[in-house]
Length: 453
Image 1 (cartoon, rainbow, N blue to C red):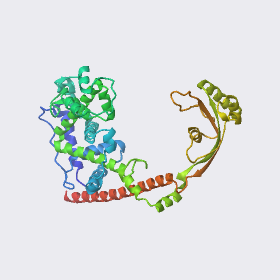
Image 2 (image 1 turned 90 degrees about the horizontal axis):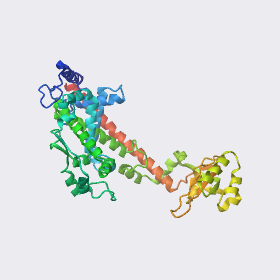
Image 3 (image 1 turned 90 degrees about the vertical axis):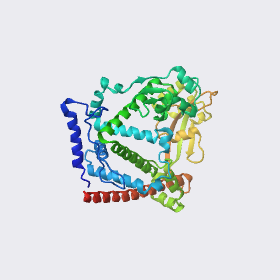
Image 4 (image 1 turned 60 degrees about the vertical axis):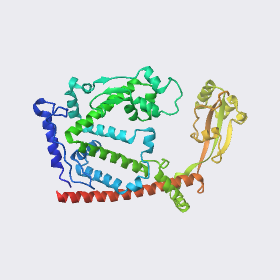
């Protein structure tokens, strides 16, 4: 293994010593500090890419928050395995948009990467970062802001149009995005262009955040601008302590970890068989009828279903009557007798007998509802789904008998469920083989670089 422990211990000790120097906080990464830590140099190169002590230190500390027993050596192997997995299978993985779902309703991958980087650094170096903030003018991040502004009602109207109009999609068009770039929320030397604009805040949002912007929520916008500034401060603090290359390496490790998780989900790991995955879809198309038949025989219990039930119902015109009948039925009064007395359905004369309901073909909403009830238990009142101009009524159900059977082997349900399950099995096995190959390559790298050191 790399001879990393002594190097990291030395750098950690340097950081600790820095904190203790005569009570001074100026060595914690302020722009005018002359006592910043030495910037990190890369460890042995893996696949032509350097690995920095910062990455191993932070990733180990993060993993130890979940598993106190995990070692630095195990985390190193994980990092290299993930790197080999993506590098060796780049052509295979790059044909899929692994972040399609996240991009649609979640955060853009680049934004998520910024969030993860800042969160990871804060998690590991929280004490040092907070101390450096206290050393700023005013003792807070406010000392890095020269001006702050918010949008007026007229600004919002100019950007989004009149309030209250129907919004088809919570996305800025090109004109709105250009306008948003002109509205400065914060001025700070921490920002890449010296400013954080509404466009910057918009670009860092998931769908819920975009909804808040379209709702013209100035408090939310201001909060998000300050969060962005905080992230920029954390990143620049880390770059001054460890070097830009080391911070970029940590960001890449976090991004690699996220991509591996997304790739694993595409292969059905941590996802259900109905997930919309192009990998599972491709495997499912290739499943043969013989495989489906074999799966059905081996997993027949998965296709167990209700074959038929016998049930009665009571239909009443309003909620008050429904509550009255329910109380009487649950107190032990005969359900059929109550149906003859209170039900307004045509079958009231037969005690609300629905007969034998087979689980086949298209069932009515009442039959579907009856299928979901437990035998021998009087159901709560269900309000019928009627049109706006129709009078609503209520149904109370009692299932007296339930019999089970199995989905027919040649049914569409069996074909779909079996082919998806088989596809997931194959995709998981494929992923496991790729992971094993990557793990062996990582172990080889560790041995080879260990020998060199």
